[in-house]
Length: 530
Image (cartoon, rainbow, N blue to C red; front, top):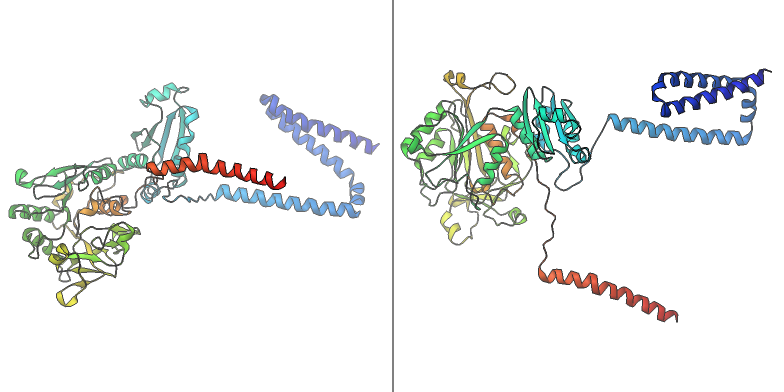
């Protein structure tokens, strides 16, 4: 009688379990009752199983049952391992980007900005639902690198109220909110998203002036030797730029953040030199890119005299690199390549190559003034040297290291930076607070010198680290250390360019040669079998 009762309870229990499962799919409103029914049915099934303990024990005494139990345990172990692996992977998510240019990984600059966030930031994607996937890969990477990042996808057609609230009128718009400020981007590229992030973190636009009137590089020139590409890079880091002719203004503008002197071919006038000295004395920031002198006499006494006051010694030479590294970049020995950098904020963690067409040595003097200690930031390789016989190098291109003639063996310093606290703190009152309401950094005089200006020209910015070393220097001068990093890279161009003969050859190979060869092989096999 007891066995019949237990058997009936088992059927009732199974009916309750399957009934609960059906309710979950067919009548979700009754979900609460389905849970109670499922637990009740499970309890009845377990009660029936406990009542059959003698039959179960006798079954497992058989050899076949023992083998089956071992197999079952093995299956459970494998399932347990799979469950554990999936659980750990969901909690400890790790990604690998195997593309050459790391196009699916965020750049060092983006990661640095995300990890430095102190308040939540929200990315609102307004698009049609079918287009959300093109944003997910990129924004998931942003959320992966910072717990402060929140991403929300909004169908612009289904939620018109919110779309109108954010003044969105274009599909594919990303609205970024941070500390009450907003920026809009109509792209899913890392460069555009990070550019908007930089503007939110540093809402105050900073001004970079390029000195003009002495043959310097033009920031608006898009030719090979122009600086238009580096000007675009400044805009992405939220800098505005303009040219400055001191003999016309007779003063340095009050909104100046950094002054860049890029490759002057003529010396400064003495009054200009005095204005720059006064600018540095009040906490100014100056970036000088000084090409080799046209002759051995050193034709820029005003500018070089300013550098010597700050314990920086420009050499009357040209750096030659005999290591052969330049050949990898399609250049010759007149383009020294640097892969070693000094311990400085500009080059902290910097590990990419930079190249400098026709560079001169820039050395840190040992007899520096109090509070002005220059540091080397860029050095060429051991197989380079500073060639003092500039005239011979320019005429014949054939020179060799001659220490007796004054040549300096490598490594050769071609970049130096120096900073000094400002003695007069009256300018501190003019410094605005930063983007997060904290006190602005204490003003410092900062000066950086690199013995070449062509490395930042349009035709040289394709070299791995040239753009980054220029922008890192500007950001250090502007006391924006949070922007010093390796920047986003564009995907490598994998297009194949074919000549007319190559295209004709590929056509004949694919349409004529291969089909005829296959057909001929078939005819030959048929003939052999006959």
